[in-house]
Length: 312
Image 1: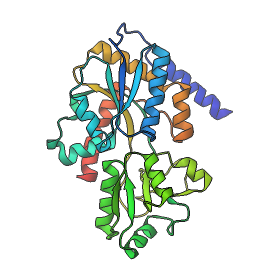
Image 2 (image 1 turned 60 degrees about the vertical axis):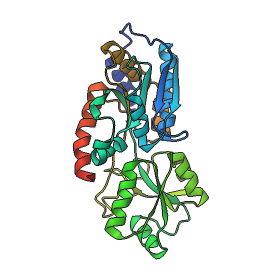
Image 3 (image 1 turned 135 degrees about the vertical axis):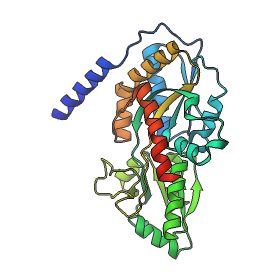
Image 4 (image 1 turned 120 degrees about the vertical axis):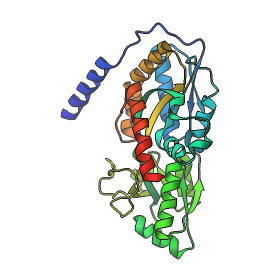
C-alpha cells in the first residue's frame, strides 16, 4: 500500500509538472512514428503503445513503422531526408547510435546535432541469457565451454552488444561466433530453438525466465537487475564492460519550436499513461524515465563522451 501511495504521488507530481497541450500546433497529416528495430522486441512494443496512447490523448493519427537496421542507424539516416514538419518522428536506443558515432562517425551522414530531441521512455535492463539446460551458468563458464567446443554462436541485435562480445573474445580467446539478429524477440527464439547458445536481451526474455525455459548469465548494465538481484554484472564477473540503453524520441533537425513543443508535450503525457507504465514496469521490469527535450539532449551529449572512453 505504501509503494502504491508513493507511486501515485510521483505520478500525480509528474502529471502536474508535465506540459499540457498548450500549443496550437497540429500535424498537417498522419504522424509516422518510426521504430529503429524489428517487430516483436522491446523498442517495437514501446513505440506501438506510445503511438496508440498519443492518438487517444490528442486525436492525431499516429502510425508506427518499423525501420530496422544497424541498431537504428538506418532509421536515423533516413530521418535526415524527412520533412521537418512534425509528421515524422523516431524512437531509437542511444547506445548503438553513440557507439557508431564514436567508431565511424566520419562515415555516417548524421551527427547528434542533426536532430531535435523530444524525450525518453525508460532505460532498459540488458541481460545475457541462455537456455535453462545450457551446460554453463555464468560468463566464465560460457567462455570455457566456448573454448572447449571450437567457439559457440552468441546473438546480438545492436552494435554495443557486438562490441562487448568482441571485447570478451579479445580478452579471453572465447571464440564466440557473433550472430546478428533483428530484435530481442528473435534472439529468444534462437535460444529456444538451439540456433545460438547465448544472447543478449532487454525484456522479452523475462516471461521465459519466469517459466524456467531460460536462465540469466549476467547483467550487461552497470548494476544488477531489479528482477534478478542475485545475478552478477559483467563487471562483477571480471569484464569491465557495460551499457545503459535509453529509449528516446527524435525529430528531423529544423523542426519548428511550436511543433517540437507540441510533440514533446504529447510524448510526456503518453509516457505518463497507465498503458505505457504497465509495459515498462510489468514487461520490462524497470521504471518510466522521461528526461524531456533538454535532458535527452544532455544524456546523448554526455553519453558520447563516456561511450568514447568505454569503447573507442
